[in-house]
Image (cartoon, rainbow, N blue to C red; front, side, top):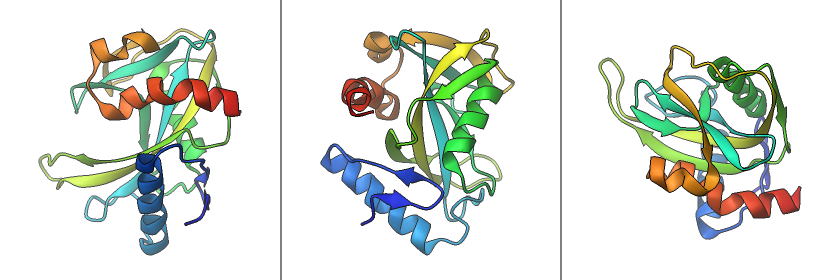
Amino acid sequence: MSDRISGIGSYRPQSERDRAMWQRLDRFCQSEPLAFERDPTTGHVTGSAFVMSADMESVLLTHHRKLDRWLQLGGHCDGIADVAFVALKEAYEESGLSRIRLLSSQVFDVDIHQIPERPGEPAHLHYDVRYLFVAEAGQIRASAESKALAWVPVSQLPELTDSAGVLVLAEKLGSFLRGC
């Protein structure tokens, strides 16, 4: 297993869960020629952004219109094999913010999860690669993909969501920032 994947970057797994997710992502990227495309028959790599407030106390979440859940910002690579760029692009498109800064080129988290079947699209896996950003300027404005946006104190995440993929932020934030 490599600590670096082309188009994704490097990652320092902190737990057995992290190592397992990174190994699965590595195998998928090596074996699937369409890994960065939007192909629901094979699953695909997606890029997500945990956008933090300037004081690093709150994270910007979207109430996702299609999934009807509070989630971090992010989306499909659609053929772009630079996942940090995709995460940043999606953060701009979905937040309305005018300046967002990547805190580290290091991958913050990897979460592989199933997207439920919808009309015209089978259930499939998202190999979601997450990066940590900080908002530097602008006012939030929800896009058409969102029902709402909210700055949520990290300490209050469990009150808003039970998504392990979002709650991981609270578990990892302190140690990640110390390692930057």
